[in-house]
Image 1 (cartoon, rainbow, N blue to C red):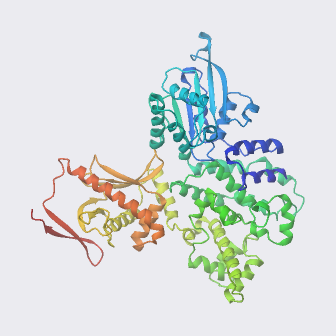
Image 2: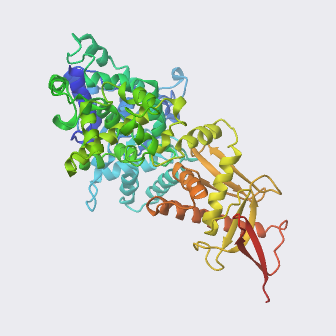
Image 3: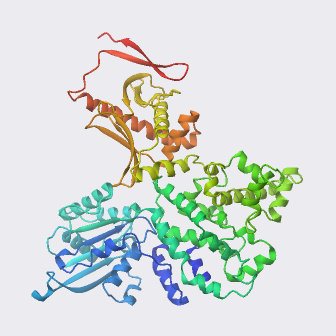
Length: 626
């Protein structure tokens, strides 16, 4: 089955990442298998820069982002769009040039066509000289021409440059210190920092692919992956239940599982939560995930199955080790290999498989004998004939419970099985039982489900976040701002230690800010379309407001602080510092507000914060004599 063999090339195997797109295409042609293709979210906009009927409307393009975002793929799409030779593109030269005749105006019958030179630098990192090496004169001249073309009303040179953002800025920094080069480099930095695609009077479209939405990439990629014609060819070759792609084949079962609505919904939730934690997942990593999820097995070559592995796995009874639920987190790979792969690093931060609850573990350990848990056990574990409780699991569980074999090896094997089962439950617990079984307690983010349903979905639809959630976040903020177990949740209390705004304990009250609209003050949670992030905004007056991104980590942090009062230092240190930084922003905003005539300076007195028996803030006034 050549499709399975080809699919393996998308998986976590050694390859030259700089030539990834070309390698996949060459393998596709050699094996006569179509690659996994779908429309990139930026494709229409990029092609639009080169589809103008007038030469004066053509625009140079920079594609930047992390490795695997699809930069080379988009460059090839433009090359094909211009109708250029495919064999020329297949060369290893990172710089290509083609000349095409364009009319000067939209009405081509009135003017002679104009020759436009299209310059493709499809991999800036391999084209530019290495660090501390001099520029070749021809390359330096070409980039100088590019810088000049950006600020001309008319030009016969249009560029498409692809490179990682760090390499992009560094390459232009190493050019000669000339006015146009400096002007171009400053434009690139402004576009990167501000997240814009265009600047006025600059003939350039700037696409930072790392700002794309990983969840959207997932939705596009999963559809193309599942609908690939190679799967139908595999199904057509099936001869019996135990054939290479028969009903007992783990590859086929993983493919079918990946096509279920529930598995896709949970995966999309993980991608979405990564986006809201500022963790962008490149397209290449998404395709790697799919290949590993379907083909992963720890006991085969490269830890990825091919067709010839299936008969042996079925005879050995080790097909259960190919669990899609475990493969999604790289469980089939070695620790060293898994840690070097972005998507498994990001998914690993959810700690799925390692986090649990008493109820979940009771189901896994005692569900087959406890009448109160048997229904859950039967529906979620026993009914799964592939990756549920098999003979290996029962034997290891019995040894663990009865203490028959207390060796470290035996215990390790059982805990690995337990981790795999917990991961399976994350993808098998139906939506109607999410709250009952507390699905998100299987992750380190206990409030992730609420974040998705009651915060993200609400603000995207223009619905106010529920009052109890806003109150909880305000309570968490107050506890961090003051360093005390305060229970106030209808106002933000800003306090300092007297000389240091970020002190752990702050008892000198500076001011109160009302959560509900009052005299220009208000606290809201909204969705910022420009940066595609949820924002927690504190409005101090009609003209003055400050906000912070309310990502999943901060939401979890504030929720736990509000309910539990503390978090493990390993989880909370960065969040704690972020919240104190936000406090400093609010204090600075208060100073700006005091400069407005509508707000009167307070008398010379200190307000000392104390707490009542119920944790409610109380103020004690101390007069300061000049």
